[in-house]
Each structure stands twice: as C-alpha cells, then as structure tokens.
Image 1 (cartoon, one colour):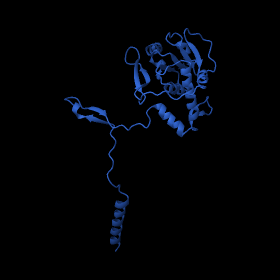
Image 2: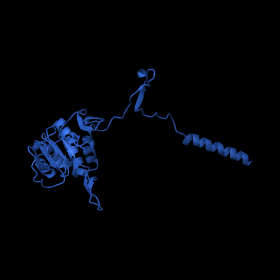
Image 3: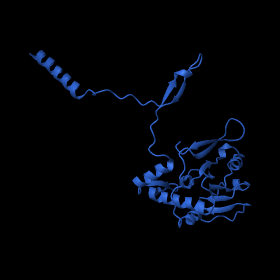
Length: 251
C-alpha cells in the first residue's frame, strides 16, 4: 500500500511541477550586439564582426538625459563636495541644472564661446568640471580636455590645434596657461575673485561672474544634431603629438 501511495505522490508532484513551474512558451533569444560577417572571411583570416542590434537609446544626447533626470528627480542630490573628514554638501539636480543654464547663457552673453566653438576643461575632478561640461554642450559648443599626463607641451599643442578661446581651470593650472597666445578667456572655478595675474590678450573670469552674467538672460539649450561632435578627446598616441578623437552627441 505504501509504495503505491509513494508512486501516486510522485506522479501528482510531477504534474504540478509541469503545469505551474516549468516555463511556458519559447524562450526569447538573447539580443545580438555583434555578429560575424562570413562574407569577409578569407584563408588565414576569420570574419569581420559587425555591429549588431544595439538598443536605441532613450535620449538623443547626454544633455537630454540630464534634463530628463532633472524632471524626474528634481530634489535628489546630484553633485557633492566635502572637506577632509567632513560630510558631503550636496546640490540637487534642479539646482545644478539652473547653474548650467546660467553658465551657458553667460558664455554666450560675454562672447567667450560661440554656438559651434570649442572650449577646454583643465582641472582635476570636481563639481565644476561637470558644470562646465554640460554648459558648453548647453550652448552648442564642443568640449575638449587638457591633461598633464599627455606631456609637458600637450596643453599648448591642443589649445593651438583646437583654436579654443576659453579654458575652464583652477588656480593650480593657471601658470601653465600663461604662455598660450591663442587663448582669450580663462574661467577660474575655485575662487570668487580672480587674481591680479596679467596674461597678454587674455581675460580672467570666475565661474560666479559668468553665471551672474547669464542669469538675467535665461535661454533654452542650443539645438545640435545628434551626430555633431560633443567631445574632442586627445590621447598621447604611440609617438609624436597628441591625437584628437571626436565623439558624437549620441556616443
């Protein structure tokens, strides 16, 4: 009797598992992000892999993605800073986006940057780096970065090749910009009052000055095509001068 009950119990459990636990229907195949192009294969060489079906991004540009986050999380913390052994002091998405708009308007009002120009950022990671990056994009410009790691002469080379008229930096980087003849504006991001340093043909601003200049003149973001260059990034390369690589607004 007991063996028969045991067999019956196993059968019942099997039916329940089959009806309610096993997945139903066909399993969707995984999304393919790259695939071999067999037509390119030749003796001694495998096929070239082509771009597959990347999902379409929800937003056309980084600035559009940021604006969507501002609408969705206006009072959430976004950018923060702290002194050693202290707690972070945060600015919200809404506060940061307002400053980005003021800064972008100030760049145009003060004629530091035109709607298709290149502006450079030359400083270590800090909240003002993000403010400058998005403000340049907001008014339609292109961002290029300066790094000491590219070599002693890289800063002057990149500024000359890009014909950038404005650089965002801190007072730590200021001495290395003093001999750049093509530069017309320097925006200092770590002081409230610009130092009395004189650089021929170049005006020193503070970030607060540019924001105050733009605040009375609110503006919408300058429209740019998704395939326009957003970043012009320089690498050291193997030999010679740094090489610039453009990245579009959709990446």
